[in-house]
Image (cartoon, rainbow, N blue to C red; front, side, top):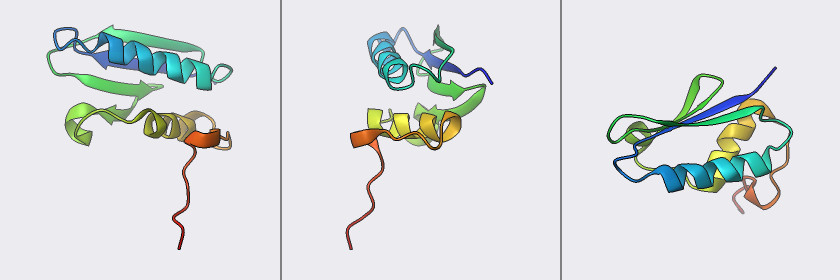
Length: 95
């Protein structure tokens, strides 16, 4: 199955740089898993990330922007659940 990531961002809010940085991080981490990544200018205040048309992050619903570690985990869980993210992987709480 081909994997397509779409990042919708508000150009008026100046979120292009943030979007392109996140795109670069995802393309570097998932270089063999992602077939296409699109940056798509959208409406005022919009910042949404989709994996194969499934919304995985919405700035308004999630209360801000994802940390890159969290974004990589969300994408990994959708496209390559068994892939290790090294230092970006979830850590179990020490108890």
